[in-house]
Image 1 (cartoon, rainbow, N blue to C red):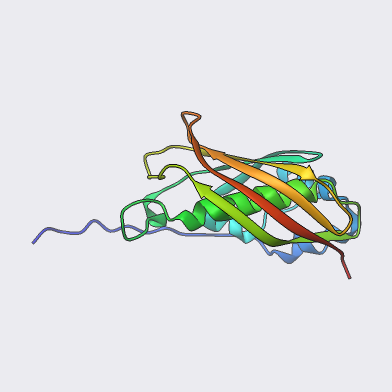
Image 2: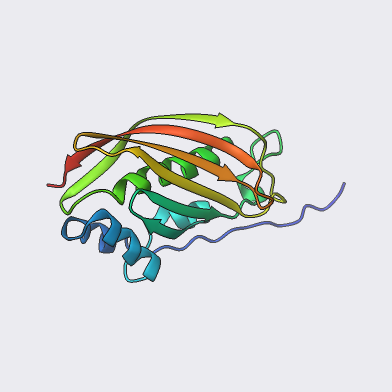
Amino acid sequence: MTEKAARSRVIEWEDPTIGSSQIKDMTGLEYLQAMIAGSIPPPPIVNLMDMTLVSAEVGKVTFTCEPHESQYNPIGTVHGGLVCTLLDSVAGCAVQTTLPKGQAYTSLEIKINYLRPVLATTGTLTAVGTVTKPGRRAAFAEGTVTDSEGRLIATASSTLLIFPIE
């Protein structure tokens, strides 16, 4: 019988209400740029998934993500849910960059196309979200994920509902 190597992962995050309490007083772009600058902590999901928001401009955001074996599924690849979460995040945040103060969004639907597997050895993933059509009630966005070699991993299209923050 062989010895099993111990593996563990510690996840830490900041109070998510610090950021969410400020969202109604900032445009979506201001909010995301404050997160990049570190004046607003990122939501806990980014620490859980090992994602980082690296840039935000009107209609476009970029995230990076470090895949690792703790994200593996039963067949020995990174679970597709990680890639889906990454794509949902960039589509939503791209739309968020177009929102005025007092507006929020939620995903209505997302369509993912997986093109190649992700492994712990794949290297840094880069996800880019772009708005294809902004709107006052609904917005549309697309996303791509590439690996460290620039190869396309997955694509997505998403519809998002826009609504006032109460």
